[in-house]
Image (cartoon, rainbow, N blue to C red; front, top):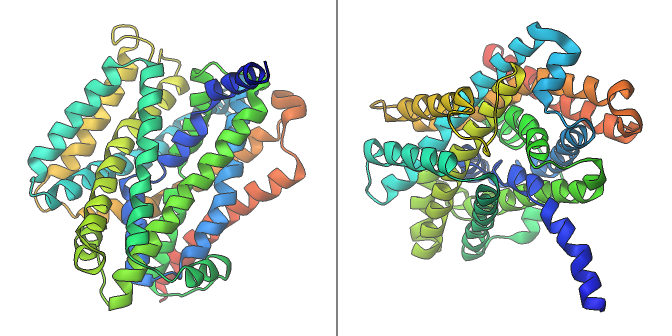
Length: 411
């Protein structure tokens, strides 16, 4: 009887779990893996303190989005249109599309880089990946895709194993996590911005809210969804910690520098062994596929929702042609940007993450205003602590952007 009561309590929670873990895990997409690899290889453990800070900021901003979706039953784009009108909605969609085209290109760049390690050229790997992603999304139903993405989330354990194989100084890593260090070096500032922008993303704020709405959850799932979001936020930076540690203990410790995650995987082989290098490359490939599927899907949701078109993975193509049309167009544009001969993969991978930081500023401002609207959320509007953290996130991305721009012109 006790076992049955336990099952009766656990099953409803399992039905709710998914949005937070998947949203958090996909922050470790191909651009994220590249950013963390460059951070560890070129700057050692000196940027780990950013992870400690962004873990809390990501958890709270994602909780705000999930809470608004649970209470209102509407996505963030719909709420922006209703509260601020068409002009602000159009501006927000423009910001999101600029950010996400770069992010999608970064996902395919990650796939290309991972497959080049195994001697497969990008002009083969990228089109094949785009076709696989298209059919995966358009032919699967919502429940099947959710289970598939949850399974992919657990493949990030590859980076934990790679870090252990590298035999790092764990004590130094923990100290760097808790004690901030800073540099006005342009490369350091760009990498710092990229670490922030690949963790707290513009598309992620829309994705989490649309996800709980599409999953048909309501305010009764608030506490369980908070746990899901908080665990997902912890998980994403837990994995990021190991990526930075692995590269710091091997590549940085030997005085080398790298330009992308492919270089990191190749450099790990003589330093930490073939097994660690292969796992690192596999993790990059998994992250690229994960992001290439989710980021265009989330973008399609947001744009169609903002302008009142039918959308949803449970609908067929003829029922939601604009939704699937946007999805296909983003895959084509993102993959073409990478197939172009001599395309700078590192620029696509890392600079797009830094761009996310700048484009996040108006999204966080709108999020703060909406989540404090008592007419919209009632008793579920933000409390003082939540507001403090969201304001801190807004200030962090604003100050980081200003410092980097200052360093470009007045170094």
